[in-house]
Amino acid sequence: MKRGTMRPAGAGRLRRTPAGGQAGAALLSVVLFLLLILMVTVGVMAVVRSDLAAGIRQQQAVQVFNVAEAGVHYAIARLQTSGANRYDGATVPITDGSTTIGTATIQVRCLDGTLPSASACNGAEPAYRRIASTGTLTVAGPRRVVTAVVEGTTSVTRTYAVCAYDALTLDQQVTVYGSVGTNGIMTLSGPNNLNRAAICDSTPGGLGGRCGTPNPAPASSFTAGASAVGTITCNGGGCANQVEGPTTPNQPAGSVCPTVTLPGWGPPGTTPLSVPLGSTVFANPATNYGSVTLADTPGNPNPCPSDPAQRATLVLDAGSDPTATVTFQMATLSVGKCARVEIRGQGKVELRLLAPTTTALRTVQRSVLGTTSQTVGSEVAVEGHRFTVKVVSTHSTAAVDFNQSGLIAGTFIVPNGGFHLDQAQITNGAILARAVDFDQGTTFTWDPRSIIGDQVYGDFRRLRAWKDQ
Image 1 (spheres, rainbow, N blue to C red):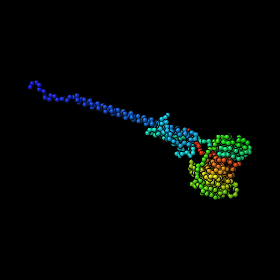
Image 2: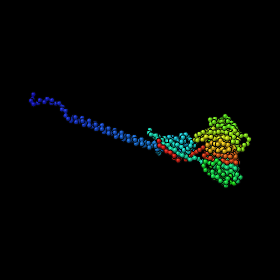
Image 3: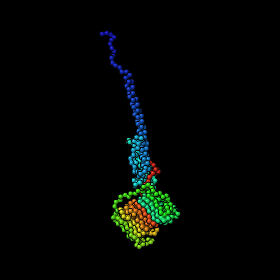
């Protein structure tokens, strides 16, 4: 054994040095730094994602508003299209070029929320339509409702006092204050003096003094002319002597009088109603009557007696709501001498006469149809637009026959039959019939609010309200 070769105690063991601890600390720092970077990245991504979502929502909000607004404009355009005066709405795709952005669900209603009847709305504002367009997108997102109220203008078909589908004849001493028309031929009788038939406007003194003062006074001023699809024959010295306004024959077929088709109301009732002398009977709107007869005052009284015991009175009550219409149904109505049909209340009355082939409405000497007054001898005519009589009968000459009557007031719609009026003392309203014959001694004054056809409105371009919901 050699000296000097012995190893010190502990020789050959590994020693711990500070370098190992530093390496672990560096690794931990890297991990913490990476976590910090990750947290910052996640935060930035969340902000970006939030901003992106907000931008998408904002873009969708603009898009869905544009879709809803486009639906309103589409509806307004449809309401100005010929033949589409009544447009109830639809679901319409809205596109940008070939790309569909969304759909507009359109609803068009009257102001009271109801659908128009034919092309008109009932109530106080028949010319107004409320358009509601609900916009949605092709992807899940917001919906938007845009509402607009537009006003239309009425059709000229309401401007006739008297219109006939086949022929219109006005005998001598007949005066009509208002325009007349026919889809057939028109004859105005002579002779060439102040007894000739005359078509007058609302201003007294026309046609060389032939036109006097309208009675009752019309609600507004108007001009008066004569139009026909066929010829207009003026036997009182020429049409310039008999028609205050323009005379326009040879119009396009079917272009003068409005086409009216009455609904199928079913068969007439069979429950008769007799109104005897000295009685005042209120008709029941819930009853579909058969023949309704008002008794004659005996003899040939002139004037009619003021004593209620000497006359029969039938009352059609219009109720207290001025915007409502009360409907009465009968097979026929016969109004005897000096008998009276009164319109009471504040609303409107529609009288339906359902007899299919006979004379459905007949009045005789000094009888009254459509008075608001209960005083005999000083009757006041109901405003013609407040009392509408619709007659189903196809009787060719006299579905309606007024013979030497007193006051006659109302809007008479007789599209299938003839209308005969002879020597009525006070007559007010409007008339549409298959054929019209005014016998001598008759004066008729148009109520400009009376409508002889469906009240058609068009050209809905007057914006009255706009709301974004």
